[in-house]
Length: 291
Length: 244
Image (cartoon, rainbow over all chains, first blue to last red; front, side, top):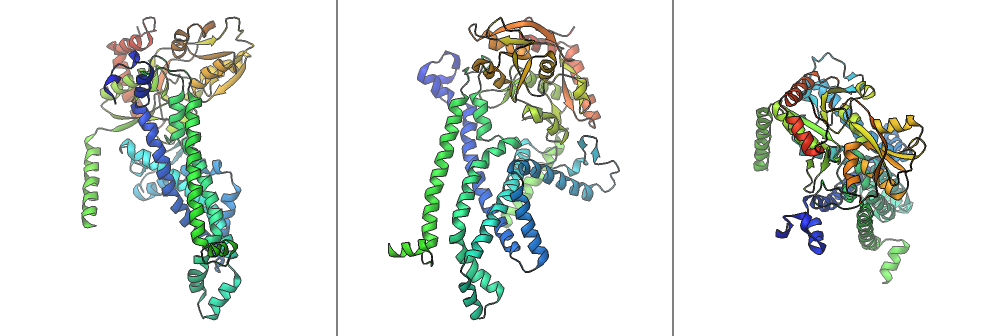
């Protein structure tokens, strides 16, 4: 980074720190913060969409669709996040490979499960073993996002189903009186009005999602926790910048990062909820009108 | 849109051509937390004895290799499920592991494990001893009658000793030596070194017999021409054990 960093072991004081904090490894650490934020920005809309579909499904008049919606929310809400988080990517990965195997290698005669190994033909591997490393990394990140979306989608579905029930019945009756079909009433009356009721629950979920991102570490993805532990650990002379156990400081930095992130989110949600409450026949909406 | 599709198609075909031109891509899984065997250096790259050995094996076996890091405690399950193809992580060859995966011949001779402590009056048969989870050292401590405390990473075992959470650490002598040398006398070797395991080998899936044969051949040739001995001395010092 800087010119004077050429011989790290001869440095002292501020110069040492400046060089230390700009090593390639630290750059990866800084990138991982951006990565966490980007990951949440991708996951949140997917989870919201899944949740919305789940909420609509659990209110459906067609019994199998309703069972699916209700079953999904109750199963996911009843199983610890961590268990689901370890199960989902593995199940998804093996499931996809199994399907690809059946399609691409119909003549394969060997068993797929050989003792401990899960063996599919080389063309069915996901990603292909000839793919470069970044493909493997993005693939496992995608699996992580799918797991997040699946788990948080169930909670979002529950929140949104509740919000839909909170829309005053009189609103729907008026829609029916105007001759709207059930479908029209849902999309034109119910959905636009439910957001103000859903927002507190959804903002809560967003906070939980922020705090759940270190779970990625469990999937072997190199996130902020991975780098904090890696950088903080005691370093011997084998490294350019030997230092004692500094994990405390690195984890402290994580703590500050997450606090900042949740604080910023709180401010954002407060604004959004003021906006959505405007003109609503709720206490918040009335207060907005007075001001 | 058409342009986008066209460029995507180009990238895809280029990617396929690239994949075909390489002999075979093998992904090497390591822990990246066990200096001087393997660690992540200040540039964020895998480094250490196993890095140079692994790269040379791939060169001799005509394989294209990529390095992947994985936590120690899930390193065998993730090999089996196909996240990578080879374990190269200071893993000693033991019968127990051999039931789940296959090992090549060793590329690091059978070595000793040692105890370190902060005072020399520690009795390692009764003390609280820290070791890394799922290592042969942890197994040895459990059988020795001492109280075993396990940690996910080797680094945490050293921290436990420093904090007083454990009275001693039991690990590969070669891993512990730099800590003792650089501690200004805080850490010291106690009790006798113990010979454990059948050396360190590459771990492969039991179904990958072809790959195993290639790797074995490369290791044998590196033993024969003295390449391994050169690096053993370079990374583990003059008194390191070498191949005859």
